[in-house]
Length: 155
Ligand SMILES: [Zn+2]
Image (cartoon, rainbow, N blue to C red; front, side, top):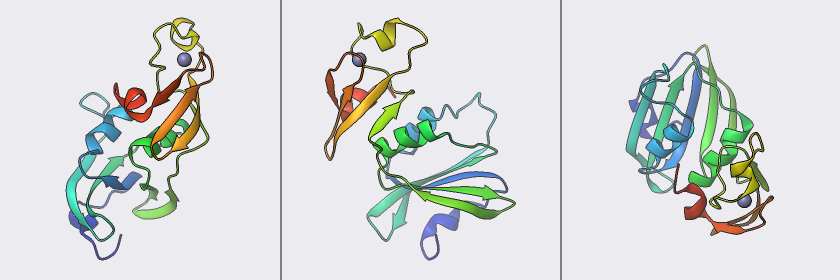
């Protein structure tokens, strides 16, 4: 986060910074984290920031919010090259590169309406990742295989 324009948006005291989101996907990341009008978090958002790596990117800063492991795994599906920085007292306490995990548990809904993970609460959805590029994952319950757009379409 040095020479590029990430600092165009102000520093935050506590919270998380998600950087290197593909341009245009920041809103999807926020909706995935349930951050919005009613969540009570202050959010700074920069879309189409110039990036050295790949032309343009989005950056999101969410104050006083943490991210769970399960949320990181789903963010990685939308933004496979994103980094997440945990900010404490204006300093980066920890910085993580995201990568698509072998297993995605919770958050994503199985697109198969009849799947036990949809019909029986509180069964948590669970997908095994078969391929990352392009994304292909198999539901651990109904064993159907789904492509990325099928899994992420409703987010
Ligand atoms: Zn299923």
